[in-house]
Amino acid sequence: MPTLTVDLGPRSYDILIGSNLLGQAGEMIKSITPGRKILLVSNPTVYGLYGEICTQSLAKSGLEVACALMPDGEEYKNMQEVLGIVDEAVKGRVERSSLIMALGGGVVGDLAGFVAAIYQRGIDFVQIPTTLLAQVDSSVGGKVAVNHLQGKNLLGAFHQPRLVIIDSGVLKTLNRRDYLSAMGEIIKYGLIYDESFFTFLEAEVSNIMQQEENCLQKIIYRSCEIKSEIVAEDETEQGKRAILNLGHTFGHAVEKLGDYKIYRHGEAVAIGMATAAHLSVILGLMSSRDLRRVKNLLASFSLNIRFPDFDTDDVISVMQRDKKVKDNKMNFVLPCGIGNCVITDNITEKEIKTAIKEARK
Ligand SMILES: NC(=O)c1ccc[n+]([C@@H]2O[C@H](COP(=O)([O-])OP(=O)(O)OC[C@H]3O[C@@H](n4cnc5c(N)ncnc54)[C@H](O)[C@@H]3O)[C@@H](O)[C@H]2O)c1
Image (tube, rainbow, N blue to C red; front, side):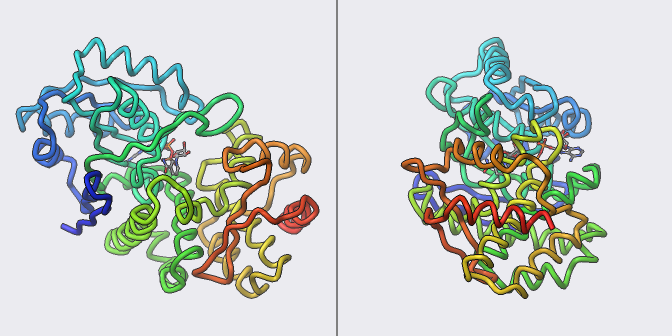
């Protein structure tokens, strides 16, 4: 089975990638936990599809399972739901040696991981990501968080999972929009880090659209590999890890102004990435030809990358409250051609406004 290791010294962990892995989750988890109790965190949608196969597998391995479900949706990624899951953990007598298993997309993974980070000062957790976005991005790297009214992921921690189990077979039940939205984050890896991966994605559009299993596993593997390499170099985002935020400064503003209801995270990142690429062209960091390549690739996965008609001053004021702001200066990750990028805080408001205007054309 393709396996990657995120190399973080004592916090290192494996990412297992394959199909039909859910039925083996019990054995895999048993081998890494000293305790017997598992708190399975999910939502009704995912639990209805994959809860039983997981709980059976855990029980077969002699593990004791308690379940805690949160409602389905980004708007529930908040402290109230955290406290609800904590209540279930207390009721289920979850101990320090117990383990939380996150079964779901990025929302479940972020929230369950956050609970694992704070419950009894931190307990182990395992990610079983069930959306493409969670499989290529959110389940790896240990960023766990919930939203606050004033901003996305404002409350969070770095808490690495003990194991990530990626079963590409579960993507068959994912709706088309959620599947395609992940292409925003996947293309981002090519753009910031690996031109040959970007070229591979250009060549594989039709296989990706058809969810061809082999091609999908390659993409999941390479995406996780790129993220792991970056995270291993800079676990807590003191420097290089910030390149993973390309498209996120504009993207988070778009998500927030849409009340987290209009845009999926990956869709907002795609808009943000196209806008960042426009900004790069304005600053002379990227050619118009490369900008066209980025926009064409995003569009070939039916991603609408035109910057939405929110008031530009509102966009900027949300961006200024983003947690990536340092000493009142906004930080931008900007592509330098394809496969390379730069982090800068030296951008004027006028340049930002021009980029947004260009991205609206
Ligand atoms: N921690 C990180 O590093 C990181 C990175 C990127 C994104 N994120 C976060 O991830 C979240 C977005 O995650 P997402 O795009 O996975 O959204 P999501 O978790 O809301 O999942 C999308 C929808 O798909 C459903 N679903 C999940 N798996 C399914 C399956 N196999 N079959 C059918 N339906 C399924 C969910 O119930 C939900 O309705 C955002 O909150 C974002 O901030 C975190």
